[in-house]
Amino acid sequence: MSILLAPGTSRTVSFVIKALLSSPSPPPIRLLAHTPTSKTTLETIYGASVSVVIADLEDKATLEKAMDGVSVVFVQRAVGEHEVQLGKNAIDAAVAAGVQHFVFCSVLHPY
Image (cartoon, rainbow, N blue to C red; front, top):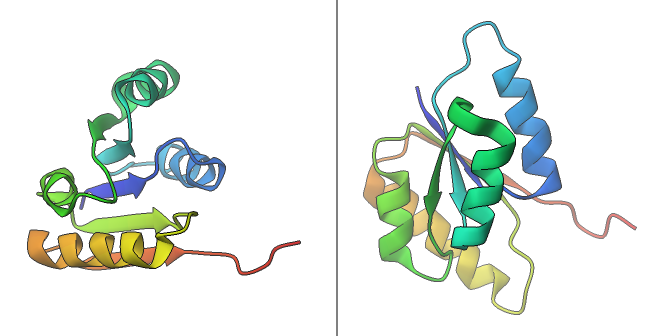
């Protein structure tokens, strides 16, 4: 079982990464980065414990490529004016990539 976590730079996702890495047998973890700078940051923080890919929630083709070969996708809610479409893109890419489990993490009005 391999897991893609998106976005890899999110605070919520960082807790999931830490929990997975602290398990006795952590699964292969792939993090989604939006830019080369965030990819470098994630590689610096987590080193060889994870792999990092660059993809854009607005681009289904890059998402499908990022999700290729993973069993589980964990996506934290995308915030922005197009967030519904970004969520749909992630779901469509997961279906196209044959992902078995899709987890969407969202908090409605946390404050």
